[in-house]
Image (cartoon, rainbow, N blue to C red):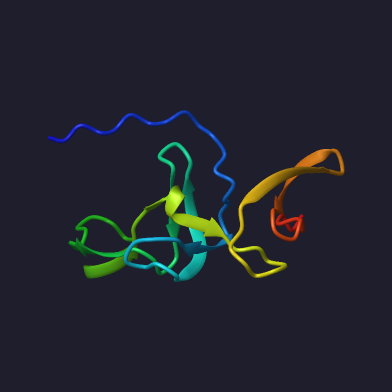
Length: 119
């Protein structure tokens, strides 16, 4: 049995669930999508429609929940270094800087200096 990799200490990635990102390299280079899940301790994100894999699922015997069976396509995690946030203001891939606004820290675009956080 394969040993699991040790988890990294928790740290913020600068990308949050619901953000639009663009893929920087790999098979899906240039595509963009919405972040479905962030795994900060593994330094990975799951992006909708990117890095799709096929899972084979067997029908469960004793569960009442209706689960899709057979060949199921689902997005697999991708490394955080391979994605970059797309600024909602300027629409360009950008790095993130933290800025103090209203007594709290918010994410801001390094290109246009607009805040990325909606609330």
